[in-house]
Image (cartoon, rainbow, N blue to C red; front, side, top):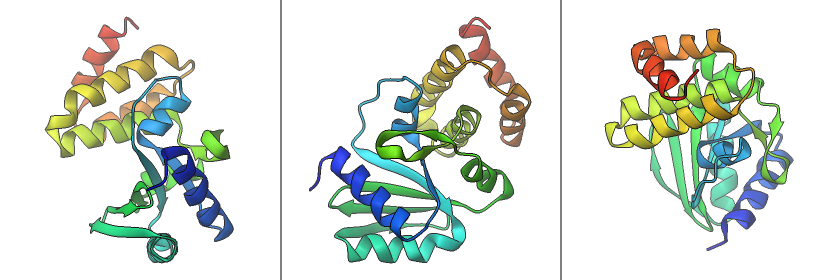
Length: 173
């Protein structure tokens, strides 16, 4: 098994060589905004139409697909990689607008999109709620010039405006 840094380099190179747009989400994206995170996997977002290409490339290069759904492909083997499919206009926009560069020059989704994905994550898996809300609070406290109209749009998708108001109050904004 490769270390995380080697996994990042390899996956980025493979997808970049195949001209597959990808961007970091999850713990590594948070780290790009200054949140120290212990993580052992790489979380990416790609366009839904690149799903088969991503799967084929990673499997040909030593990764094993161990779980898949309409939304996510999960790989292990050489390293742990979770790939989220950008299927809806809002997630496709997140990928298209990823411009901050993270480790190894990989694009990272914007903080507003990261907040939206954190909201979606704890709605889909309530066990994650405390950590995801703490991550949202970190972003609110540490990223300047957030686009609040976009953040409210994400919150409204999941009926989480009041929860986001509470997080904002804790962040003293």
